[in-house]
Length: 432
Image 1 (cartoon, rainbow, N blue to C red):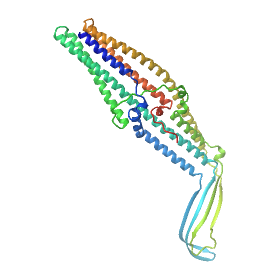
Image 2: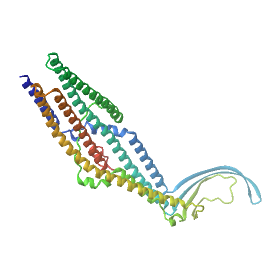
Image 3: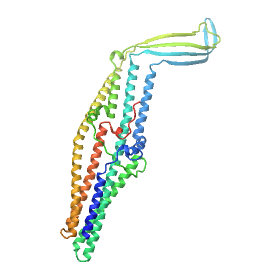
Image 4: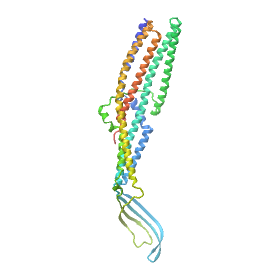
């Protein structure tokens, strides 16, 4: 009768465990106010990396405005007040000057330097905007990885607690049997040794969980008490093909390379003359005694043609070298991204196959554990066989938990390389 009740208890526990494992994980749509996406929405804007990228974007926008101002004239207002001793004809005159003059200066031509700088500043501003997107994606990936690691340790701790509870019950059972003379002292020592091993493993997992929680809360800027599963859907083939056009780091590198290329000017443009238009108007004049002639208003056009000497043309060589370096950075980033993205496909496929095999192995080993316990109660198995079977079952559970974590992290990395991570977390911002 006792054996029958024990068998029924194990069957109910296994059915509950299978039901919990077969339940589908919560998706992003089902967790709008809690879970990982909500945590990321609060934490990512506060990440110092994101704040620094946004400050760099503001700097690039200010530089663009400065470059744009070169296309417009410069207005000036000059007030003069003074005293001088002048020779007016044959007379020595002490003159007091008090006048106000307005002027406008406009550089109407300089070989296209202002337009080139404006276009380059615009591309750099676009690159800085992509840097903000890259910083947000990096911050989200880093925090999500810590979140998933915490979930892995939570699952492992539950399995470890179950193992420790079962081993503790087994030790009590063997101790009673030893006191009644039905088990040897060796069996009791073996059971206690198994209990010590379970306690050591559990303590190690508790330490890892504490360290992971500290890291997660430091990245999230707040305590994290509840965890909800997050599942990544398979990326469509079109998203993988368009990864080069969606990856923020690549887009930022391309914009900087384009800006560097725009700053490479031809020799003719470098040596081109500069044409300035000057317009002035005298607003107020209280000079006493007044001079014989006073210019009330006027305009002039000045043309200057500078011939750089002493190696000043090396600035153009510098621009060419910077453009070449920027193009090399783009090629390096593209090569690395494509290689990493291609390597994720077999990794994810292998992780999925391994996880399916571990699921099947866990079910079979759970059956073996139940059967081994019943056989031990009936005297058909010894204690060492029961302990080895339970240890193997716990090892499979841990392997499955670790494999699920590796699969989740690999899928998240694939989304990041494809430039879709912010979108899947609901953090994508509309283009301005």
